Image (cartoon, rainbow, N blue to C red; front, side, top):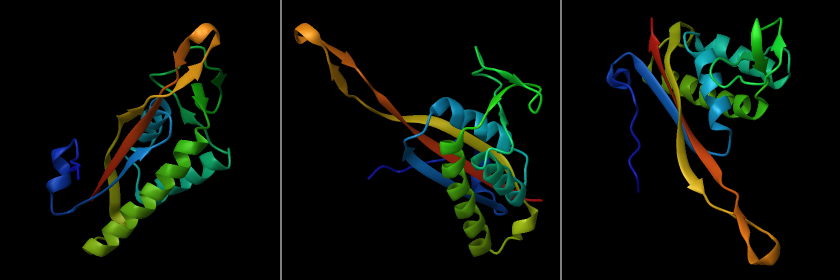
Length: 151
């Protein structure tokens, strides 16, 4: 079995709580944008944001992957509703909250200090084409990790 680590040394602190989800089928680009939007929020604020994104009430600003994206007044630039990523992040935040309760930390004071999305395993598939050819059709899985500190 593989041993998964975290990409930050903050995960080893006593007042830190961590959670991760591995090899989920979401867009790595939109997962990165959602992680940036969640960073710096408390668990309750982040859960409220993800619920609003799923209901399409609030947008996530797109900062890196934004070419040919529509600009919106709500985000003061390119933005969108990454609903599939928000549903996965909501489950991850529930896990983070449960881990904080298990560790004996005050859940209301836990602030997300690290959130990252990493590309995972690539599932290779092929689309059959005419004359014996084929076109690759790959699916990239994503690892998402979140670390919170009690402030």
